[in-house]
Image (cartoon, rainbow, N blue to C red):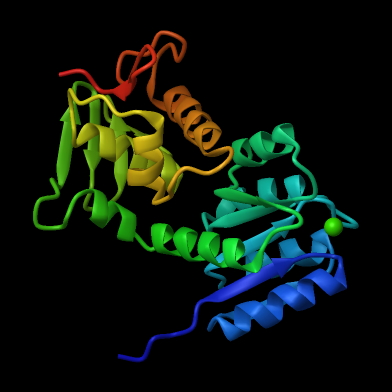
Length: 238
Ligand code: CA
């Protein structure tokens, strides 16, 4: 089987960094293209067929947040945001705009490669398979008004379609296929994201959970579908 190379878009204005990243990604077997400002990055993202986008936050012409927001209007290609400093607000804002993950400069190439691999794998559906092996996976899960169609990756509530990001979907599907079981955030990070614990990982779970709740719950502050069990974790009640 010809294993086609995964294609990565690097949006980065610092040439030294983009060169080092590009060389390392190519050595790791990826195809890479580089955009040196936000506008070019957005144009390339929308017209190219990329498997993942590595998006710097501070960019000339258009910042990374705006690029991310524009890409998310039409595409769900995995986006890893590159933040310049340990700024928790930047990370949370990036995740809220639809980025899948982030790395902080200066990052190690090893960490970057691991994140890229995990995000591409997750996007191609392998995590869903791992969460529920195909032969055991239910095609349709029904939780009161909520119908999760795992064949077509569609979720409806009272017949109305709900648009979920990949991670929101995987998180919902995972909990829905384990009704009544409580999962800690650490567990969810491992099962749904495929990560071991890492700095900021719990925040990733919380941000995705609040986005998911905002979409499926009538009153997200008083959730009926996904319940928080104080100091234990999250679960969908029987
Ligand atoms: Ca920059």
